[in-house]
Image: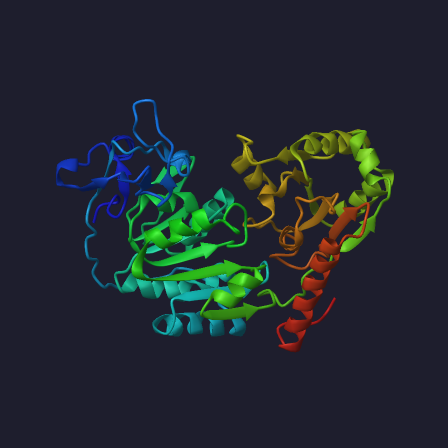
Length: 436
């Protein structure tokens, strides 16, 4: 089995990624198929009318993967049939009764349906619930892709999988990284799936409600084109849309975390001068006092609606607390991964961030503050996800969530309501030790 089997790439991509591959033995198809006044991209399925000066069509839809045009070919190698084998998992933890029930159902229901949704609150242990299913597919000689819209989520999943399945080769692909470890099990961002054609027996899509996948038919095509015709899809989410809930064949809901503590219910801190102060590059004094209070027991993640605001908040906090250890992080920060690891190691008391860390990362012993929670970038799903960064693991440390806002919006009310409802469902199901 070669790492590149199942990938359908342009000649330039083969030369860049797999220079030793002999394309003489590869199957090839036109990169775009000409129809009347359009050409259909064979990588992403888009119909394009765009042409280069030489007259060839090209596809603007998937150009982020490199330009593909109608005068090119796509090359692929047939999939080698994999043998059945014994697959071991080295994870030393154990599933709760509620987790195990879903994990067992997920395995047994594979023959009954094609689409599945694991709807579980943040920190419920969705990844661990997947282990028996993954083990089953691998042992049967079938191929798996675990994908997410977010690079941070992919990195975290790959790390956890390699720790729990130490004898398995797991590839990792996203815009800034390619770790080729075979094609039976890959972890990748969704765009990378456009480089595969009818390859995977199981595709697991984590954070299905996250940007840019949510409400994006184009990226849905990446999933459908990469899976085998009879392949299965498992969606994971803490905040699935009503549309997804309606369309999947099987849905499993887990309203509680594995540690049996309720989700922290956000405290809404109303400050009428907030927007005015932020526009003047200042933080209102009551907000500084609130942050100081949170720091007594935990480190703090501060979420901001824009990148320029990150430095404003950092400067204001250092002006008030010169000894405070803090940093800022955003999507294009070159030190992003290092800073996240430093926060995990408690090297910062405060990490000031955009929504880039709203999901897929776990820190121990943090409280959360959202500045200007009424801002349009914080939709209901984002508010719920960000609240879910608090009290995810480790012993209870009175972690809190604060929504700082100048107005009570419907979105804020809905987010608080959903968190409370999950706690009520969990309590009713006997999944909590007590309501704090």
